[in-house]
Length: 335
Ligand code: UT7
Figure 1 (cartoon, rainbow, N blue to C red):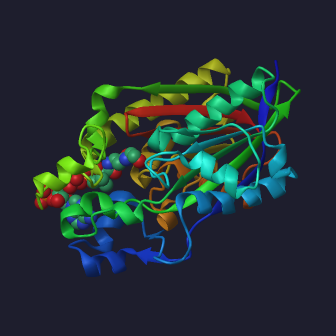
Figure 2 (tube, protein in one colour; figure 1 turned 180 degrees about the vertical axis):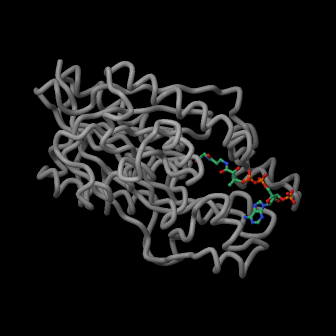
């Protein structure tokens, strides 16, 4: 049995910045409302014709992560691609990325666990490495939200929150059992599936059915979020799953050097920070700049924390997420 360890991180966000002011010109919202409720000041949106897709953004983040890991794409044994906005309905974006990386053939799979997707993918990578099945695994989260949002006042409760981007992590085998991923904890509760969802088109609601209904009031093909229900569950599950990880590893919250939460809402992060008695330099937030990038949010934030020298060798790092499904999870590692 081995441990697995992140040895390279990378991120990519589209150049196009969309500020709260920009949004307030096209829908009934304001910088004050968005800042107060979410902490978001701006996000990145793919611009038509800029060449960005879910897979190409992932490619850009991956190239940086591979270079930092000093590993060639051909040395990857497995690609795990977390996204809720794949390039195609099928196949998944993992195979598209495998082709873009120029790898002739390797296993590639998509992880469909939305905001918790990166934690689920990390946990899966860890298991494949632990058992000795694979040595080098790429875990990538990438989202193209902007093209599918209702950018009118009708969709303001959701569309001001989400942004585009990608983050990647290269994991490898670690023989020192005191280093790398120490434990992962993942959960789901499908009774809340529709509280944060995009219903159609799907096998429940095929395209011909939507066309036949020809209903301009049909909003099933836009993302829906019951914000308050999500918020209430998020703070409980975040706390539970972090506590479970701390207990498993005999860590106290004071042992945490860096906590990187999924960037869902600055208020949620602040609530968790307070609950665990963490100082500002023990928590990394960048939702102000990118909004909620779902599966990409943790790897983007972790990359930035590492680039800023806030994650160093030997540090105890805690990652945690909650989102659609509902799904949630945590990952505890020694850097
Ligand atoms: O990453 C996945 C996990 N997601 C989350 O964790 C999100 C969790 N939920 C939240 O972060 C919050 O619920 C939101 C930020 C989404 C919404 O905040 P809220 O305090 O729950 O607001 P609300 O939905 O209860 O809406 C309050 C008011 C409503 O108006 P009335 O009915 O009081 O007149 C909304 O219509 O705010 C209105 N509103 C807006 N006003 C201006 C909703 N969206 C907007 C907007 N601009 N963008």
